[in-house]
Image (tube, rainbow, N blue to C red; front, side, top):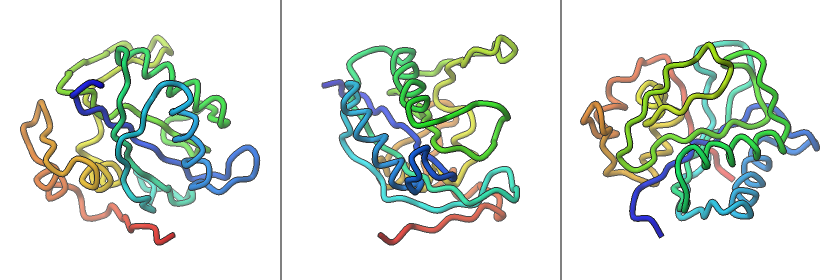
Length: 175
């Protein structure tokens, strides 16, 4: 097992292709990841959060999983995208409502900056370039990796959370 921290963000705000609730879809995705060699070590509770940026689409359900993966980040991205496809993810417009969204948030202390956004290919940026701006990522991250520090910014999760705009809403889901 790798000793590096690998965190995956999970989110959904539409029913699954088979009519499942967003949380049921997220749970099924975690099982599918295990089948594809992504071992879930720890996971956050589920959170319900308002869309960012603010819109009239349904609220999201979000969580974070700490995983073990025995390959390179680009292969993990490929696995995540294939799971998204299996669960009905269609990419049309940035920040649109979706059945599933899986993102690599952190892959150890690796820092990568993919700049080719116009190619249509998914470029791998690590840590995730938006994670420090998103309450729906930072709260669940704190559940699984409370001592994590941003490798570029040097800030703790609590410091990043303190800088968030007040208009982001989040609440833990009681199951």
